[in-house]
Image (cartoon, rainbow, N blue to C red; front, top):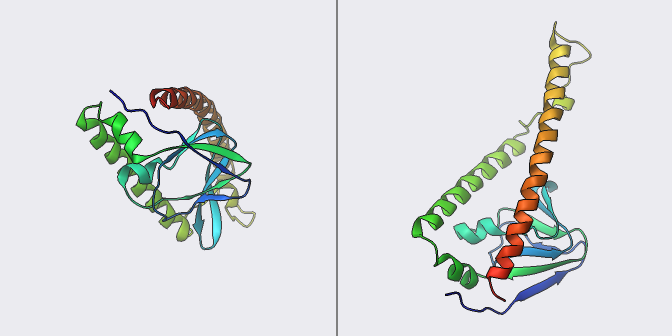
Amino acid sequence: MSKKFRKIQREYAAGEVIFSEDSSCDGIYIINSGEVLVYKTIESEEVALATIGSQGMFGEMAFIDEQTRSASVRALQDTKVTIITKEMFNDQFAQLPDWVMVMIKLLVGRLRLTNDKLRKVIDENKLNKLDDRDTGGLFIAGEEQKLREESMMKKSGEMRQKKKGAKEKETTRTKTAQLLKDLDF
């Protein structure tokens, strides 16, 4: 049976940094209202990773793999959050088989490695965007058509991803709302 926990809520003003990359973890954040930007700082420039709105969740990677934060988060507008502490999380997970936590830690570890590799690619300026190709106005036979096809495929893929993302966001919002109820605040 789950224990009853005191609800921990915080408020952040627009522009306020909620936590910084490489800082220690104090919990998982669920957005009650507002919107945040998740970003990495690379060579003193911010690289946006995600924008998360109401009922979204962030801060889970460092929480689960017990490492430092992999990115920074800043409030884009006045934002209210509920914080899930380690004690709350462990109380809920105690009801699940041990292999579930092992699997989650494995997945988070893989995601962290992928993030690290992406950061290295960006740092080394190897990330080429289709629109940034410098051809000097010259195209090898068929190259222009190939670029058009790649661009159309990219746009089509982006549209599918947006539709898929919208469905996933709605599912996540529903699950997040259920999580808050299950924590029995």
